Amino acid sequence: MNDPAPTAASGRFVDEIDRARAREYGLLATLLARSPDAEMIGRLTLLRGDATPLGVTHAALGDAAARATVESVKREYFELFDGLGRGVLLPYASYYLTGSLYGRPLAQLRQTLHSLGIESAEGQSEPEDHAATLCEIMAGLAGGHITASAEADHAMFEMHLAPWIGRFFADLERAKRADFYARVGTIGRTFVNIETEAFSLPA
Image (cartoon, rainbow, N blue to C red):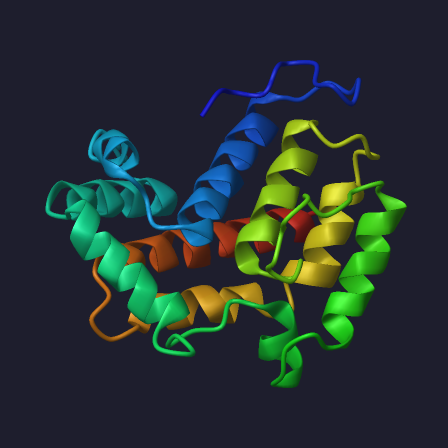
């Protein structure tokens, strides 16, 4: 994944912290949208962590990638998110907040996306409140690739991610038979906690 430019397409300056946030959201979006191919798994084996909470989770994902195969991760993804008719987890805001798909959270998200000038990609079949889509949008906002105010990522997070996505990542972390994707869940839960704390600080 390429780093966002210091001054992004939106015209606003993007500092190193926001570039790092964009990379983190981008990683989560990529891994939640589909199971990784051999090239992606190979790149993940090169992940190196540090002593920070997020660094530890990166190292754990790198270790999981090193013992994984394309087939094993594909099987995990299928069992978790696809399954026979329905997977173990349903990574949608509407489901987590209302117990059903295509609920009010999706309608509210669509209003927000419309106000930001974001349209669904042609051929996109997943509802926009899928965790992968929301992480992709957050990556675009944090990295400055989506033209919006500097506060737009905070508003998006508080309204459309904070109420539920931490619970989703915790469920993914604890999912039975998950190894690789349990580590993805740990990264997501840890990162969401960091975002929540950062957004609560005085501006």
